[in-house]
Length: 263
Image (cartoon, rainbow, N blue to C red):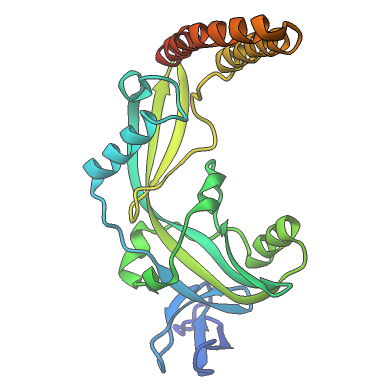
């Protein structure tokens, strides 16, 4: 029977990590600002951590330009920036767990994804502490909510670094552009961090290493033979080896340049 009375949402009380003030949370509430000190905080189950954001400086065209420059760099196959077809570009604030830790007299900062992502390389992002700003609730519609508990992220951190003393745990929402592109009927994903233009990708069309290894092996073999000729050929052998070495250098360089232009 409906009595006309609404059931109040359960309220939890936690403590602000900045000022120690009481935070009264409605059921399901995870993002809030402390009413006493104004700190932006995130609630992960029974833990309260600081909540920050990075501000974007790149617009969509500039982000695309950063991706194109990365595609034309030394990591990817030749002319990927011209051959790849961009199929999608979206923007979001992606959550990362930010840990400041100490171990055996040294300190470090590590990042771990706070939500599922195919580009886990984003943990290599450099986040200067001076660029962090309190998270604004106005960004919530553009932000991905964390789905990875802080305890799970701490476990990953300790697997990689061993036992560490955690000095600070925070949640940071980072502005990123997601790009999907096609190359030779395969789909790839890359992220461009909208504050610095850093590009992250787990899988991409990389330069083939085999041709470089072949030319490197040939070069090493040629100069090994010339060294043996100089060592066992006496004075005449040394002169002959020197002449052949000078003659071989531009040939080998030309072959290496040709390989680089094709790969």
